[in-house]
Length: 93
Image (cartoon, rainbow, N blue to C red; front, side, top):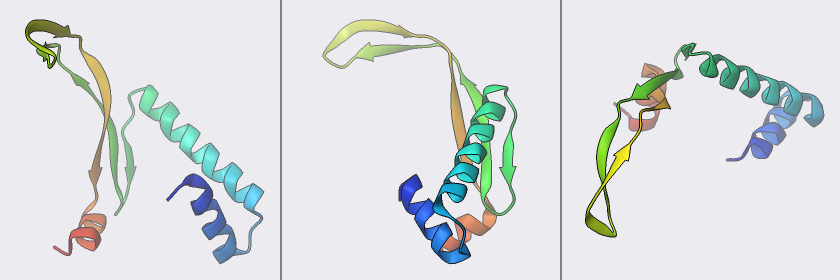
């Protein structure tokens, strides 16, 4: 599903104009990214939690040359942990 598909579906079910739905959806996504950039955890009850974690620096290997060692610097990554309701709905457990 793309953002466009989501906009069309929401507009059809609510009777709102697609342009307005797209604007609200884009602003919501922008604010989520902004909060994650600041290191804030985003929690949607029954859906899940987005949080920024920092990966430690580590040593890797070049798959084309296994004898070559590559330093992988520390970096930030976004993690998502699904909420209980989402997990139960998808997995049936």
